[in-house]
Amino acid sequence: MSERFDLIVRGATVVDGSRAPRYRADVGVRGDRIAAIGSLDGNRAAVDIDASGKVVSPGFIDAHTHDDRLMLSAPEMAPKASQGVTTVVAGNCGVSLAPLVLGDRAVPPPLDLIGDTSWYRFASFKSYVEQLESSPAATNAALLVGHTTMRVVAMSDLDRSATKNEIEQMQAMVREALDAGAIGVSTGLYYEPARAAPTEEVIEVCRPLTGRKALYCTHMRDEGDHVTDSLEETFRIGRELRVPVVVSHHKVVGLPNHGRSKETLSLIAARMASQSIGLDCYPYCASSTILSWERTLVATKVLVTWSTPHPEFGGMDLEDVAAKMGIDKRQAVLRLLPAGAIYFSLDEADVQRVLSFEHTMVGSDGLPHDAAPHPRLWGTFPRVLGHYSRGLGLFPLETAVYKMTGLSASTFGLKDRGVLQQGAFADLCVFDAATIDEAASFARPIQPARGIEAVIVNGAITWRDGKPTGARPGRVLRRDVG
Ligand code: ZN
Ligand code: CU
Image 1 (tube, rainbow, N blue to C red):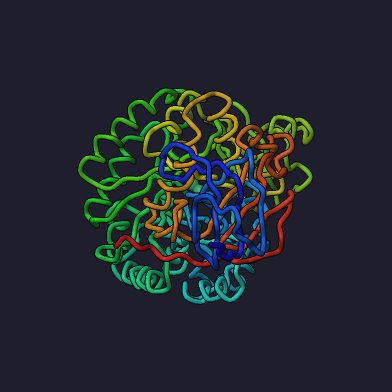
Image 2 (cartoon, rainbow, N blue to C red; image 1 turned 60 degrees about the vertical axis):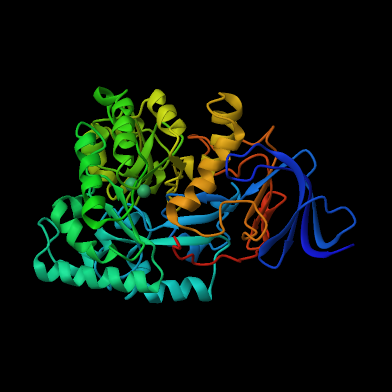
């Protein structure tokens, strides 16, 4: 009996996102769902994708992004769609675009990582969600509301802890964001505008998360000498609120701390026995954020990613910039500000240990508006599949895919996503497991990956033949944990 489908991926090797062994099948899509998996010979479809010799997997979930504004300003989402990403988790590190109207105020770093003053124009989280829903992007999004963004709204002076009244204002913002569809709160306690917030402030601000099936994600206060204290702080917040926590871009920074991922991962594993903990990481031994002199001190090498007064130095080594300017590096940093940078400050063995840890999700932490971005923006997922899984054999393909699909969907509570099974949403990635890899590098960071054949979001093809199709089927996803 012949059935009709909207789309059939034919002859593929299915890697289903659950870590189950791969198998051969056709995948039939009807509307926005996977309608059939098996032999679909003799069935017709409006669109056929020949995937013989290729893999079809669930579309990748980017567990950690700063795509809040990219979804509005470049909705084809090329840096992500080109990697097979079908869902992004946005609003990380305490920084969300909403709810903040800056008017004519300057944008305080690190909020400038995602947009200038003009982009901070959403008075409520709901108005941002409505904008995304009325003018969708090519990827789905799960959204966090940022603690730092809320601090900028509620407080005139960020160098102190919030007062009772300011905390109440932020609680109201959290409630409003959750009502509008946010899946939780993110903090960036590492960054200047949130550093003065004591643990108690974070707990109180996040109080509305309790009982709402929401979660807490954090760029921790310290990823260097005091990383274990920061982990304990994060776990305490999760316990007091009775919510799951996600440790963002887990790493140990600075030469003296190299190797300490052994310690941090065993602490995480121990605490996981009694509370819900997730973590993500990006597959590189260099980090990237705003430029500051203090941050350069833990790095062996620093690359400038953008500079407002000196855009001509984007992509250059700080050493060379200082030489060109004829001043020392410290003075050069001051002249470049506001600016961003890449810091080579991680140990490759730690990166591999964190990435291979059973519970680690893959997240890019890409900074989409940098002039010379960290290559993680365009390369994260193909690099894990190509370099780390196929090349180094760090883990099998099934595990690599799980870390970017099924694990992330269950951690974030994204129902019927991240798994390739009948009835699930048709978010799919067709790729060549033999050739997939990043093409981006530190020297040439803006390059679509190799080996991505087709990317499908809610049944619509968003990326094909090395370019975006123009389809924008993305949805704002709610957290659903039954
Ligand atoms: Zn961060
Ligand atoms: Cu981040």
